[in-house]
Length: 118
Image (cartoon, rainbow, N blue to C red):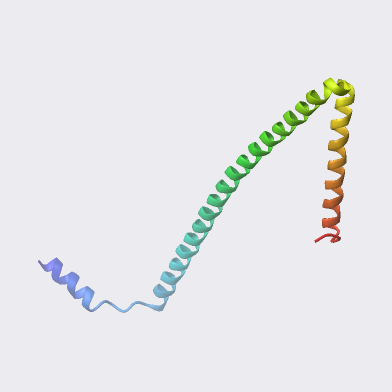
């Protein structure tokens, strides 16, 4: 019972704190706050890195599958043209058309970089 009375007496009339103890408490609180902010920034960065990494993996797989589909389409075009023109001529026709398209796209990209296009 006396312990409860002492606790109540201390809570009602606490001893005045010194300026040194208040400054020390302020510094400790500041350190705790800065540490918590750094931990929060780390957690946010880790979360973003994880999301971007998984998105990059999906984009990479999609690019590989898209390229594989394009290659299959081009091989199919060669096989479709081969009976009419022969395998070598069919290959030259398909490769020539693809190189022309790639050149046009490269020139369009270059003009966009130099500010020539909208």
